[in-house]
Length: 447
Ligand code: SF4
Ligand code: SF4
Image (cartoon, rainbow, N blue to C red):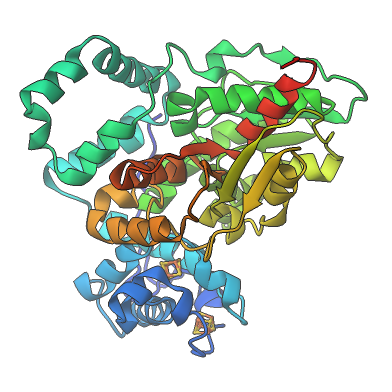
């Protein structure tokens, strides 16, 4: 999916200091910050470094100063913009409603053009963001290579010979916990249409995602079963592509817009009542598609129409009224609030409602369950030290005696799997919908 590079803003046309490309940080967003500092204590990077530049207030100030020409777009601005996890914890507590996440993403868009990444890192980033993720067939080929690595004996050989040690620790740990890649993703495996069971409550198109469908296709399949079980006709549009969240986080907004346009066309054409997603990061990105088109009235209107239909799976089940399962799942679990579910989408109670409705399941709350685990898109790959420290704090908070840690985002699932592996804890890492699906599947099964 080729995209056209934007032209520099012509003189006098919305030119904002150091931010000279279209889609610059919006003054309406940063000007509402009243510098109260309420956000400092909840910011994971400020908690770790106690450096104002790496706090929400500091980042907003730096973006404003660069916008107004008081600071150049150099490392003093770029570094804090990229150490941000985009976790949005600051937005939850901000009394002025500063959209820190959107400002960070807009600023990264400027950096993407002003200081394109060079060398191997830049080439790899462009390969994945533009050459692989927007193309489901290429992504599937990469997934098949990973499956070959996992199932052919190559992985065992590489581990036995010690060759795996050439990788840094965080990549070795990630490799150790990667789930086995299935032969095909749910986008291919599921039928294009699954009938609703019982009283029909509408039609829902399943957004299968990229990481979710490569590593957790079983979660997508469970989502489809749970939707159908609760009266929703399920459609799986085969032409859908990745949501573009990774591109937005990296600052490649042109590519993200191209991907958003494709998905908007595909899903609006399906004529469904709801677009359902089970990955918190992708859900937030889909709901925020209008942000990408703030200067394009036609596409902005289509993006609004699209995002109005988007629901997280837990949100939709509570909204339409789900059937409490009748069968027991005897487990003691804790719940981790994925940042893009609790802070970006304000969804906290619905996953807990689903879990508490499962007979036999005990939910033990985790302290600071809404503090970032360090996953944050690909932050755990680009900033392994900070991501590792946040993971340690998260694992310290997992209550003793639970046999599963539950959440609603594939990035968090991979990150917390690393934590479980590191601590050698006997706990599964599960998506909320997997437990609900298990309860439904046990109905009518004796034993
Ligand atoms: S809480 Fe909001 S208004 Fe207060 S300093 Fe932070 S971003 Fe600014
Ligand atoms: S998004 Fe998260 S890491 Fe970034 S400034 Fe806000 S609280 Fe800090």
